[in-house]
Amino acid sequence: MDWVTLKIPSYYNQFQLIDFLIDMQVSRKKIVSLENDQLLKVNGIFVPFSSCLKTDDELDIALTQDQTLDYEPDTTEANILYEDDFVIVVDKPSNTIIYSDDFTNQHTLANQVACYYQHHNLNLKIRHLHRLDKDTTGAIMYAKNILSHAYYSVLWNSETITRKYIALVEGHFDKPCGIINLPIGKDRHKNNHFLVLQSGKQAVTHYQVIKELEKTSLIELTLETGRTHQIRVHMNYLKHPLLGDKEYGSKMLCPRVMLHSSSITFFHPLKRDYITVLSPLPGDMNRFI
Image (cartoon, rainbow, N blue to C red; front, side, top):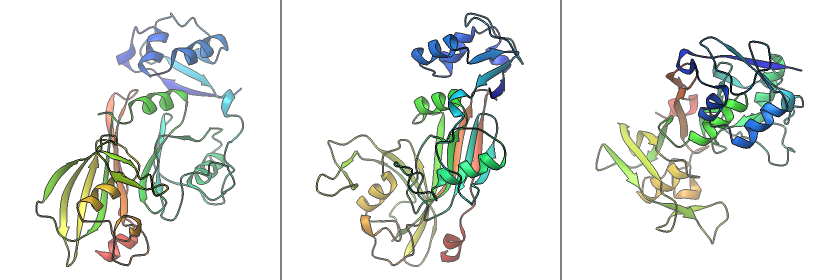
């Protein structure tokens, strides 16, 4: 059986193992399964989950459910921006979908991550934490084990995570910065299309103008919420659609939607610190600027 090992930081000194798992947002049902099936060890031995942890204890997590890769490895490896035993941050290229629901598409980002795992002898399941649209480039984060998957899945839209984007949009803004707090809901008349709707879910986007070009603006956006197509919907509502985004009002010809996930900042519960991972602006956006 394969195992992954995580070191316990001083913050969790004298925490009971069960309380540590609860702090990691692991569900009660999953905790019972981990204990009953003996899928966790502390310093190489199975211990009751009432046992207290100590600083620098080594927690071994069984990878029994990861023995079969759920996505076939692509011929191309994912480009890694950051990696440790807890998470991995990948630099997503344009014209690439995150994954295929029916596993038929073998050239998704999930397949590229599977290729990276295979080449580095990491027998891990692909654990998505969020999505980016097909055209959107940049940083996207994956969990590497059941603890990080539980932790970030529960706390994704909280102060634990900050995501910033760079976009090229049509026109110039009246104000150099602002907050867009407008609810977003599904368009009942168009599949996979979203609108600003009073009956929708709360969506909050912060924007700041970086540079004004002749007919366009380069802006930075920060998300407080993670609604589908949030940036595209909000920018279209302000009459500043993303360049190349025909679905959401763009009139300017562009080979793709000019949106880039420029950074992810996340709290790492084992390092007890915030980590910021940057993704450089892709060539096509640099050339346009």
